[in-house]
Amino acid sequence: MQPDVTSADGAGEREAGAGTAERWVTMVGGTALGLAGLRLSGSRHGSWAAAALTALGGGLFLAGAAGVPVARTVRETIGTGALPGVAGLLPLPEEPTTTQAVVTIGVPPGTVFRYWRNFANLPRLMGHLERVDVLSDKDSLWIARGPGGVELRWRSTLDKLRENELITWHTVGEADLPHRGSFQLRPAPGDRGIEARLTLIYRPPAAAGGRAVSRLFGTSPEQQAREALRRLKRILETGELPTVEGQPHGAYGRMQEIRE
Amino acid sequence: MKALCWNGVNDLRVERVEDPRILNPHDAIVKVTLSSVCGSDLHLLGGHVPTMRPGDIIGHEFLGEVVEKGPEVLRLNRGDRVITVSVIGCGKCWHCRQGESSLCDNSNPKPEYAEATYGHCTAGIFGYSHAFGGYAGSHAEYIRVPYADFNCFRVPEGVTDEQAVFVSDAAPTGYMAAEMGHIQPGGIVAVWGCGAVGLMAIRSARLMGAERVIGIDRYPDRLKAAQEKAGAETLDYTRTDIFDALQAMTGGRGPDVCIDAAGMEADGGKLGGPDSGRSGVLRQMIASCRKGGVLSVVGAHGAAIDRFPMGAAMNKALTFRMGRQHGQRYVERLFDHIGKGELDPSYLLTHRWSLDDGPQGYAMFKDKTDGCLRVVFQP
Image (cartoon, rainbow over all chains, first blue to last red; front, side):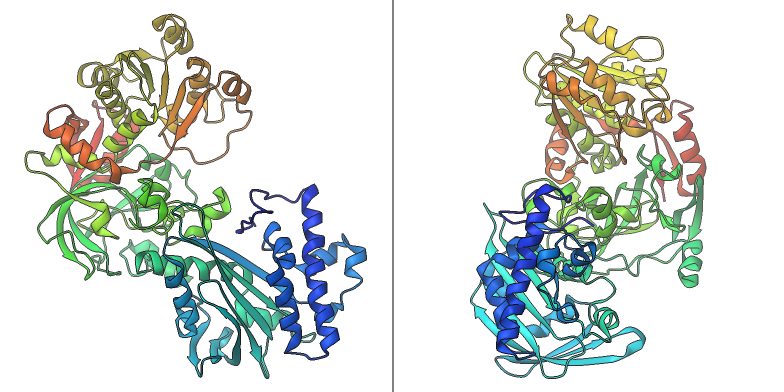
């Protein structure tokens, strides 16, 4: 999987190389800072998010994440044993997993910001979301369909809102998969518009880990994040999503479709 | 409606399928009047493009009449006689605004194939496999055109159907090949492949001021067309050593611009010998091109090329330009050239057949019998 990310420090480097290990350290270090904040605060859903987001806002976490392939997670890195010193700091069952994607959109920042700010728009970007009810300035109720049509509900609350720059949120109360999200905008060079970066940080519960992730984000969270941003770009730039669903094709193709 | 469907390697069938309908607000439905075969379809037929699915309607170079349009289509009207550029642009993304619509960010509904293979996805193309979006093609009575305001162009009065149909693909591809060569006064251009695209590249190079253009092929009727219709001197690569001949014709300098209008299917992929890895034309171009010259590639390539002669390319300071056609930026210019009598692509249409004869049409086009340059179907 190729990284779909660019940043000042990660641009252009695609394959794991000598420089990559350093970025892993930076990234995992950033995570460790976030978890340190969690342990200090002692709260499960509140401050750990804030602490990690502080690290994220400070750029340490992002600096690492932006330089590495999106598809690879902190968990995998630890699995390789590449980072013994840092890995030792992490309480394994609670280590958060990060998914990140970025896209350039050729419209003014306000257009992108306003679209994402209204969470009720998100089901159009994320296939598994059925609807998002905006309950107040800060609170929203998210309803998704998992495999087999199982309904999943959770509440989210906004953390930070910086006009045309940043939106962050996290789940509150009982959630199958507690997670935090950040949607960050910055101007792209020249007349290219803005760069929108979506970061999802989630912590699979020790028991139901993999299943909860796949229920919420599909089998590939990275792909889901990238696809959400691609749809956002396409809707905002062209007003529609390209499709070939419903176009004519030959009989043999129809038969094959039925079989599938 | 009737449509020509791909059902497997070298298995084309004319079938009854549903009529297309408007699926998005910027769509239009075009009733197809003329729809041409294209050399790039041979990759699909031969099974060299892995993302074809049985039942796919092929064809991408066509002329027709607008019969229906979505609510957001503002520039076109029912009854307009239009050509449609075969490579689909959204008209809004940064690449489309730069005039590079074949690099469109938005028109490919299935970007995952190209992203996995090429790192990024490029534009959708009509009837050209699911890696290029899986859009139903034009060898049918009707076709749905997305982003119709950007991709359809009204044909001016005085330009015939037979001239206009090739402004969909062959003419802009050849024109772009010549333009990428950045031809200077006194420049000598060599063009590998004298099919429709090569012939259009030859003529375009002349229009852009090339002193001499040399066309390279092996089919006598194509070499004759290159001479008589496009204004080239010609070389038959089965009779001549191309490197030696090009040096002899250019005072030992080599051509200033070398154009690949053949692609990976050149001579069935065998040009340059069994070890050339479908890159025989590129190797000849790199060796033959003058120092500091330009290589312009519009022939279709799909996969990797090993043992690429990078040393020669680097030390000779060659410039590589390439890409699928950004037709939307050339259509008006091409109609202008045709209107002034400076360009006439109509001779490319050597056979006008019914869509019912689709499979035979492709067989003849593939074997290049009966002086066939292009079979054009009339649905």
